[in-house]
Amino acid sequence: MTTPDHQSPPPDASRPESKDRIYRSPSGIAGGVLLLAIALWLGIDALISGSGRTPWLALASLILLVPLVSAFTLRPAVFANEDRLRIRNPFRVVVLPWSSVVSLRSGYSNEVVTPSGTKYQLWAVPVSLRARKSAARRQARGTAAESGGDTSAVGTRPGRAQTDQIMDDLRELAEARGKAESAQGEPSVRWAYEIVGPAVAGAIVLAILLAVG
Image (tube, rainbow, N blue to C red; front, side, top):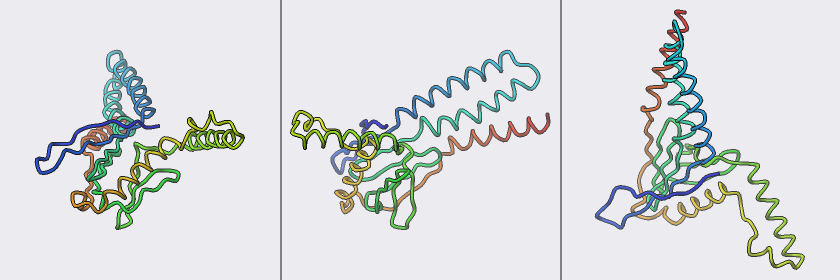
């Protein structure tokens, strides 16, 4: 499940301001907060009450785990406005002007495809097969009620799963804005060194401590 929000990009005096639609995973955020709370609780306890190498091992583990947990749970987000699609995945930030979006696919994962055939997964919009089946069952019940003459269910008949609806919205935006002058450009990818750096450092320190122990 994901929820949209709105955020304004830096102002551009040459054209009207375009707001970002932001999609994130509430369940991923909740799980990440829980995991971080447990890791910090155990790690800080080991730092305070541990002896010998235990505090150092706890510190190295925290340096490794906190960035990784944050990367896979709190960090993923998808930002969409009239000019481009920006994908913030665990270790990369991908910026795709709408002209560089060939298609948005939904299967066992949601992904965007560029003209070169490169695929980027939308971590913040995970596929839920359970939600799809549940939405299909509700829609089938609504259709059956409508065909049986029960018009009370027609106005509230449920649609698709939420993540599938988000992908439909992104497809419509890509189709509508793909040829716009302000939506032209080449894809860009930036590695999230603020995540990769601490995680690698923690892994190296942890490996050294385990090796010398």
